[in-house]
Image (cartoon, rainbow, N blue to C red; front, side, top):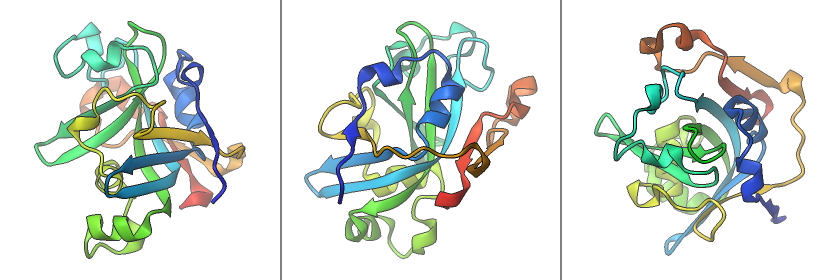
Length: 196
């Protein structure tokens, strides 16, 4: 498998989370653990950001033990436990002090298929990673990864030189944020249709 160029911190720092959510499409997400290495192309993301985003955990500049990670400079993982059932992986983006992140909603597995099959059990392959909790389970990502650098040797992102044409990117409202009032309908979910 061709190795890509590992992203630098500067590529996580731009202040527009929607721009970063598009940028990450087609990048390779890699997880390395004692069990083995799993990687996949990112094909679905959602942007969250700024104190004005009512769907963001740090809306209104809310700083808690859970949200403090969102205020760090881009390039770290923000992993949280959702509904007491699932882990969700976000890439913190933007400059320090401005809470924003990109939720990784879907990937297409490239490497480590036997390990993913073990982790995902009897789930059909087409449903291995078509949701944010499924991505975490397939990659072995959990709360221990919260705050981990995305520039290290455990969890990182590679650029393979792919350019995704605009016509292949579907933009829709985010999923499951009906509570966010006027922010619920903003087109901040990005899907690379060809990758699905």
